[in-house]
Length: 304
Image (tube, rainbow, N blue to C red; front, top):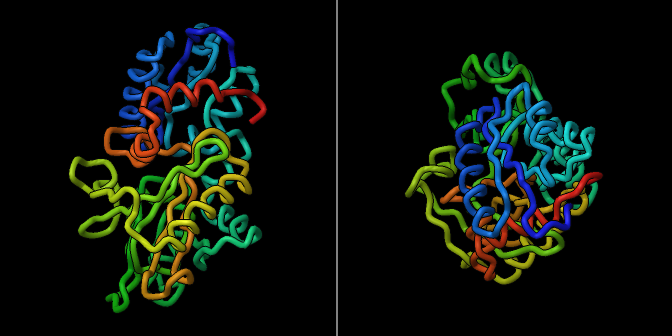
């Protein structure tokens, strides 16, 4: 990253993914926060001309505020590596790996981290017949923010009829009852554990709408579960090769104690909106939102 006291930072946001609106919100918040710290900030809505725009602007750092495919799966990271522009968050390999939920689980298992059984199947197979015994969850294997999630209960009338905009290939995962917990890792430090309380499924609306969910921070859970979340999140960050900030999500079935704690996924581009979990966790440990954004800029590099 540049040694300039007031680096020129291009905040890349928006883009063409299903999470475009979330990314625009994240980008606007981060751009405003970085200006508070003295950075020269230019916000760019990522389109097919992104490389041309970056060549024209010649930033010291790119702050990646994209979510979903293209911005979170290694594609933009590859462009930035090719152009040798330092950038925030994870690099090509970790971004690509964590965006594929099935391959992420392979890494979890190899590292001894607990996760649920799941399989890949085509959307046509899932709509035609149950590919595993209910209850189970169907989700795109390469989208985030609970986009396109179907929950099939214990006594369904039949297999789920997936919408036409679902991808050709999806992931089908055993349903895990219990509480939704999450932990942010910042560099080599796990910050804290949040218990996410909602009236129902922690879906897109619950994640991003005001009042959609209630966050208990720090989570009021047994010390052993709290410590395990912190340990597992840091280990996941490390074994997946993440850089900057990541956030790992858990389900915990409290009736089963430590055996009921499983990893759901690791996010290399955690949301940075007003209702987001990661900035809230940073604030809880004494790191303001502008400080957190500036830390990401200072941490930026190529070859991530």
